Image (cartoon, rainbow, N blue to C red):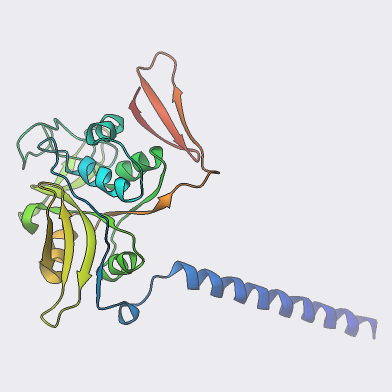
Length: 263
């Protein structure tokens, strides 16, 4: 009898924990998974995204980041953002090359920077930013439907020059493409003719629209990179500049992660 009672208690314990686990998983799925395409509104435009022309030939990422931050009420200049960006010959680690070289420049002389350093830099300015890779159009549309504009990496005028590989001094190989460029996605329209995405162009600050197929082909060249933001960081997030001994640079510590930027 005692063994039966113990087994009954064990069964009840596991059943109770299984129910709790299922509830937790259900809640996580509900909040973590973006809405499916057929649940999204057919047309969205996020008001309040104001574009400005980039101030340097190759500063599109800093321009897009500055305009996105302004949407959330964070005010700084394009040059403020660029100065704090890490500099590296690996675009996945920092800005590559001379920002004033002509558009279309390629490594090693001039190029740009990819999503991860931009997201980290935005966090240093107080925004809850996250880099995305191999994203998709439905996820982008879900973010816009939630009222959150997104930085995306594509090419000037959605050109398709063909991707190349670049090996930086750290031995890493990165995919690069001529005319690499950034935009702030601000809306979409599921029109019967195939639909369009609305993008604020860092080059001239104008809002332009491109068909889904045209946009996706250009976006895919660099692995469908994006930076999303969810407003200001909470008061519990820590952002600290730490000077290293004998180093002219400072290390930005964001929740235990770091990047390098100028003092």
